[in-house]
Image (cartoon, rainbow, N blue to C red; front, side):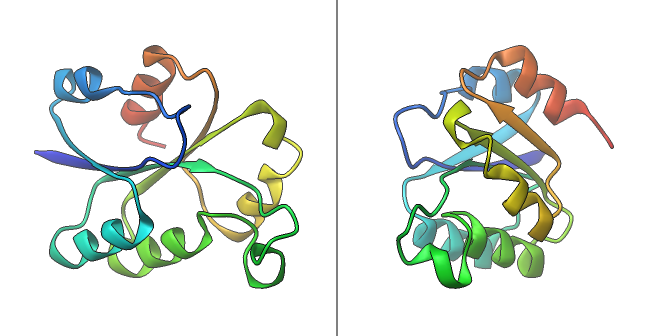
Length: 126
């Protein structure tokens, strides 16, 4: 069975548990990157879903572009075959390119994320 880890950091993140179940994917939800990183030590997921939040003048500005940098780096070392699906608010569109320059991302979906868009990203084997 395939597995999916979601990092939930805002109320915008959709609850697509029914879709994941329909597709035969076991999903685990994490509200902190630290807990997700601990879980990666025990099991690696086939998919990762996380929300892109650009580092507006905070401590991300130096070494990191966004909230996802450390998690994606961890995925690259622990779960290199995991497909990374990034969710973003439309206001972040001007900055997503900075993340995409650093990391290979399977799909970027803009809020509101529909079941159809997520299903297409999960079933796309590219």
